[in-house]
Image 1 (spheres, rainbow, N blue to C red):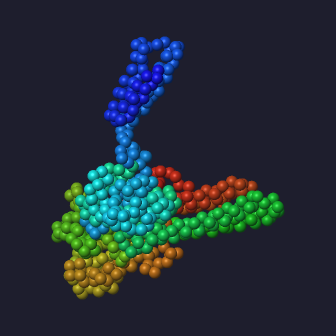
Image 2 (cartoon, rainbow, N blue to C red; image 1 turned 90 degrees about the vertical axis):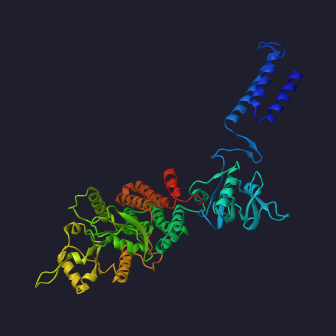
Image 3 (cartoon, helix red, strand yellow; image 1 turned 90 degrees about the horizontal axis):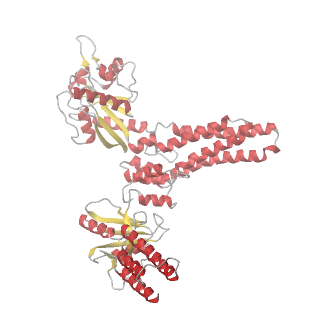
Length: 568
């Protein structure tokens, strides 16, 4: 038996040294064990017990080695290769791809220090063997396998939890050349304990680590995506926590009301019936005040969502009135084809612009006419009608040369096509184009004539311009900016209290849910005060969910973080 054990030990060591064949060696070992003594002994014999013990032991080892091979777990200089679920350290390019001065590659996770040791090298012979947290150091960036120098740059190590993600974070600030970035990212992919980050994964870890709440996450995303000053100002409120503070204050009012009711439940027996009714009335009064406050935010005409995504502005009118010319004028480039042929624009053209510091989604539409025989143009007209119906603001462009009707010995009139008049909205403004062809008509005369032609339509704004030579265009731009600011109640002097509280559809959903539960609370009589208190708890929970308290649904969190870029 001693000789068998020695041979088993030597074969086991041989199997460990030979990575490509442990199963074969162990099978040979078991076969040798059974052949010890020439034949397989009966299992009740003493020799049989020893052999069966050894055979089971090495068969189990063989199975484990085989499973390891199937899982492709290979030993390397940095440890075993792990699955994506096991590799908690992530990396990604945090700056826009392309040529530039500096690019930042961010690494976050428990193995960030190992990444520092594997892919960076000191430029001096006496460089530190450990990074000094929060201190920038000039180091070479190298390939972890070949040790080839790829670039040099500033390296920053942030020791968790004092980092953005609350984990250990490493930042490589290197040159932003395509070849450099490709080489460094490829070098990181060679490390078995790292994997590329998913979109928004760095921010998600910051949320899960308590660094950010959901309103701050959304504000950070909006700040990155902000194209206009209005979007920036609204996003800053979210990213810096000011928006969350307003929601917390709202939730605190509900909690105060809840504590008042809980106290009433615990000590209400010490108060007579009249006092109990007065206390319940006081609680109902507080709840109604909260409902009124929430409804004032819900009835804000979606100004927060509009400031985030952009004000939808539709340009419409009859064919050849100058709609595409206005579209190009606002875009400051030839974005739409201009032609004297009616029906040139067939589909809705869309651009996102900055007008007066506000984000505007501009839509150029096909000329509205029902007499066309062109099937494609008819589809374009239908889409134009939908664009006007769904717009926040619309501009009706009319050609003065086409609508001015001058009869002998009579005052002039304006004839508005029925196809256009049928789609006028309360938010429709009028741009009277080609004024250079009817220079004798003043703006006041045109306003009176338009009011006479459209007696049932409000006329908020009217401009007389010539898009050909630029007459009146500056007055039009100033007036349009004022209308857009009025639509979303925005001003340059807007304070925190004036800024919109609701900037996401989910905010609106949670606030509506809170109102529902508060109304349920006010409907319960004194005899059901215990059930009424539960409605207050649900209302407070709905407000807390806005900032992420109690939110664990993967669909909600996944949708929010997936909207980020990969390196954020």
